[in-house]
Image (cartoon, rainbow, N blue to C red; front, top):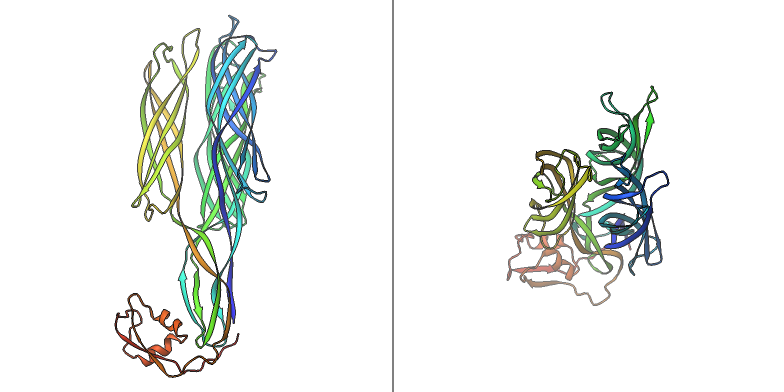
Length: 520
C-alpha cells in the first residue's frame, strides 16, 4: 500500500503588530537660506528604508521627509522652504519572530510638532505609526489517494486552501519633466512638491504582473519676481514585473506607494529656468494567491485487516470573499476663524484611516475617518501660504457573502481623485473617491493523515454474520469500518438498503466470512 500525497507550501502570517515610535531632530537652516521669521507649515511623510530580523526582534529603519515652509526675516522675499529629513528606528520583540521569516512594514506620520529654537534652528518631533507583519513558509502533505493491490475503502472530503504563491516587494522609478508655459514666470526656487498615485490597475499573466497607474503631482514655487505660483501635471506609467508563480485569473493583492521624490529646476533651450525635472521611487507589494480545492482522503481502512492511522492537526485558511466598495465622499470644509481668506487652493491631500471593522451575517461594517489637508495661497503678507485640516468620518456596510463571526478580516482603505471647489473665501468643497478593499478568510483546523500501518486481524475474527440495528446519525461507511468489511458487501446482502438514508432502528446484516487479499 502507498499513500499518494500532494505537497503544498503555505505562506502564513505568523505575527502582526501596530505600534508607535518617536523621531526627534534639529533642523539647521542651510547657509544660503535666510533666517526664519515665522513657520507656515511643516509637512511630513515617513518612508521605510530597511528592515531586518535578528533572533526574536524585528528592526525597522526609516526616515521622515520634511518640507518646511517659512516666512523669511527679509522683506524682499515672501516665502522660503527647507527640504530635509530625520531618521527613526523602531524595534518589535516577540517570541513568535525568528530569523527565517519574511517581514513587511508600512509607516505613517501620526503627529508632527516643531519648536523654533532660534532664527537658524528648529526642533522637530514626530510620532510614527509602524505596522509590521512577519510570515514564513510551511509545507504540508495531503493524502489524495491510496495505491493498493487489494481491497481498500476510502472516505474523501473536499477542502478549500487559501495559499500565497508569491509575496514580492518591487521598486521602480518614474521620471518626467514639467515645462512652465510662456505665460508664467521663470522659476527661482522650488518650495514644495506633493504627489500621489491614482488610476491604479493591475493585470496578472503567466509569469508576469503588469501595473499601470498615474502619478499626480503639484509643484509650488517662487518666480523671479518673488511671487508664488504652482503647476500640476499627470505622469502615466506602466511597469512589468517578472513573477514566476503568477498565472492568469490568479488572485492578486497589491499596494504601491511613493517612497522617495527628487525634483530640481533646469534650464530650457533658451537658458531660462522653466523646467521642473523629477524622479519618483515607487515601492510595490505584490501578493499572488489562489484557492485550491483538493479532495483529501480523510479516512480509510482495508477490510479484513487492522488499519492503524497516524494523524496530525493542521490549520489552514479558506478564502471566503473579497469585498470591495468605491464611493464618492463630499464635504464642505471651513477654515478656522482668524486664518487669512483663500485666494487659490494649491493642493488637497486626503488619507483614509480605518478605526473599526465588524462582521455579522454576511455584512462587513467599516468605520473610519478621512484626514483632509488643504494648502492654499492667500494675499496676506504675513501668511502667503496657509493650511488647515478636517476629519471626515465615514461608515459603510459592504456585502460579504459567507462571512460570519468565525471569519477573520483584513481591510484597507485609500482615497483617489480628490477634487475641490472654492465656495467662499473661507469654505472649500472637496470630493474624493474612497476605495475599500477587504480579504475575509475562515481559519480551519483539519486532521491530516501522515502514515498508516496495515496488519492482520489474527484468530479473533469470527466468521458468519452480525445483525446490526442502525443508531441515530449512523453512516454506512462508519458501520462498515467498525466491522472491517466493505460497503459493497453490506449492500449486496441488504438489497433494499439505501446507503444515503439509513433509518434509525432498521436492521442491517453484516457479513463476516469474506476473505480479503491485500498488499501492504
